Length: 261
Ligand SMILES: Nc1ncnc2c1ncn2[C@@H]1O[C@H](COP(=O)(O)OP(=O)(O)OP(=O)(O)O)[C@@H](O)[C@H]1O
Image (cartoon, rainbow, N blue to C red; front, side):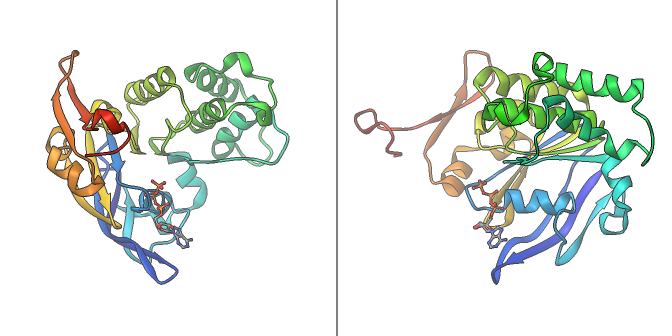
């Protein structure tokens, strides 16, 4: 067991946003978090990496209460890639990725070969080595996203939490980033909107609806026509695609393309 939530709750503006969630991220596996807009995915991810405090329940890392762990120990283990991370400071691409090394370095420690290798390897993994010196502010949305993923990789975490990491990415980079996460063998919890990508790349899926986990398990067990209709209000047909994998087709009437059935 690595990261787990035990009946956790969090509210805002007198509304329960995360409502008694229990889930476990199995070591080296990818847990996908899906759910409609506003279902509580980002809020839950922020609780799981202690950016917010749970009001009740407990988050554990290897059976230790996350709330009692020293921040530095936590940062050595766990990295978080936020949905719309930004920075106002003038930094180059490589400066941003270097920030990922902070938990591994003493206050006055000099920059080591190991630090440099971790940064260069992380940039290469997200296909951004050539942008090494480009000012971060001048990057496109998708390039920024990839640099933030590189920063998290440079942190060399054992647990990686990503909030819609494919958001700004073109299809090639969506596929390559998710394939990379699978190859890393790191425990991942990823919020995703694309149900086909979730089905393809996740080992387990948890479905959030109104702040509660309403289904969890292997993708074929969870992503059914009935569940998608119930939770997302969209009719789908699930069939074997050309690759032999399950494909979720959204049923839209051709004359009014865009109007769900
Ligand atoms: N600090 C806050 N104050 C008030 N409401 C909040 C706060 N944080 C989150 N919420 C509300 O909690 C609900 C869940 O938000 P959250 O961002 O966790 O959803 P989400 O599932 O990640 O949504 P999306 O798919 O749109 O990114 C939303 O209705 C949001 O408005």
